Image (cartoon, rainbow, N blue to C red; front, side, top):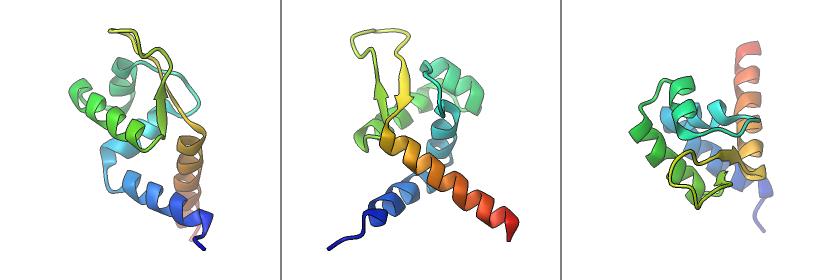
Amino acid sequence: MSDPNDELLKLSSFIRISKYREKTLKSIGDEVKIPTHIAKDSGIRTNHISKVLSELKSKEMVECINEEARKGRLYRLTDTGREVLDFINDLEKKRESD
């Protein structure tokens, strides 16, 4: 039987191997944001943000809450995305205190 933490570890690894994914996840955090604001907050160009958001959506870490909109789509973290972000933040805190 697999450990439920295994999935969390796999997803956090998926995020941490890409600075763009990590910055995007952290930029969204507890908020609901449009890609332009995510790009501005994270310092990543908007065309890269679109690709990263679709990668995060494919792993069910972010969701678009107004998919029908052509402009100004709103993104937020899913429960899974929040868990992964908390896990990554905890790892960083642990590393800083060591």
